[in-house]
Image 1: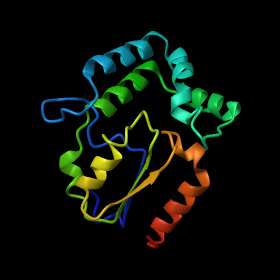
Image 2: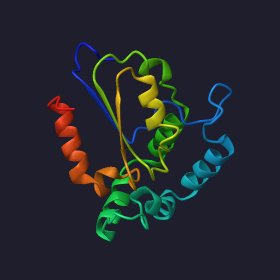
Image 3: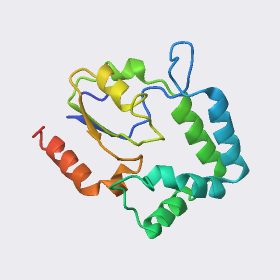
Image 4: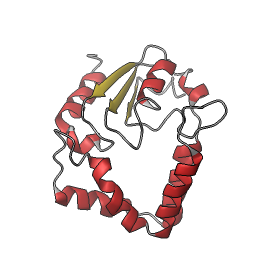
Length: 168
């Protein structure tokens, strides 16, 4: 997985290795729930964004002080794609299975995950990635949502710079 060209991999709030429940992924997300979310997105994507911005940025989570302006900017940014692109991205995030690829990573790997990430639940994503990638390091940020880049900017920037400089 890019070992020759890459000196390292940083995965921040990644939805890997596999989100959707299946016979070989029994702890994954129930397909019935994903169907409801997909139908809600398809019916009214802007309203879906309004209804889901709170969990995305950690509204009511201690330490997650994202301004209303940044929340609105994030929602607008998400609406710059077509409905088809949004639906395809949603499907790909749910159905992709990177378990085989993750075990083959041989470069230093940093996995950053928030404890309050509802888009990429830590027990389904960050913890499993770290278990699959040999020698990886899992950095868990307490009270961090999926929008960790907005809520924990300084900590994340320092973590990534240290990793890039091979200080970790």
